[in-house]
Image (cartoon, rainbow, N blue to C red):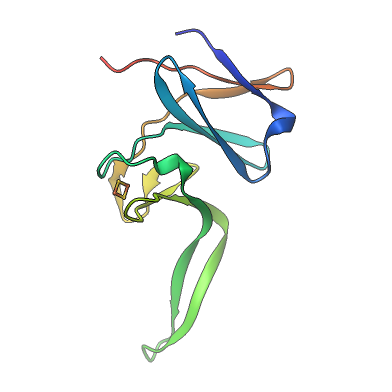
Length: 125
Ligand code: FES
């Protein structure tokens, strides 16, 4: 499938995302700084519109040696998208669920060229 121009680069918030339809497939395109990532907008859990969920930093619990908690800590480097149907989270850079790398989003090739964003969608066999 040839590359399809989906947006001007300047039209993306940072961080931000757009969901577009290409060749009958919904694609979520995410911007984190100068990096772009794209996935099919279909959650591996029950096919919810995962790319339309909240974009949040990974949250972990800061547990002390005595087992008590210092509360939640938010990552300064890992951003996740949270599926709006049941809350599964996926690392936007890898498409993987943080607890099970076998659960992942379907990656779509994306690139920036001459101030525009392009994706290359291959229909599923
Ligand atoms: S459909 Fe995405 S978490 Fe269930």
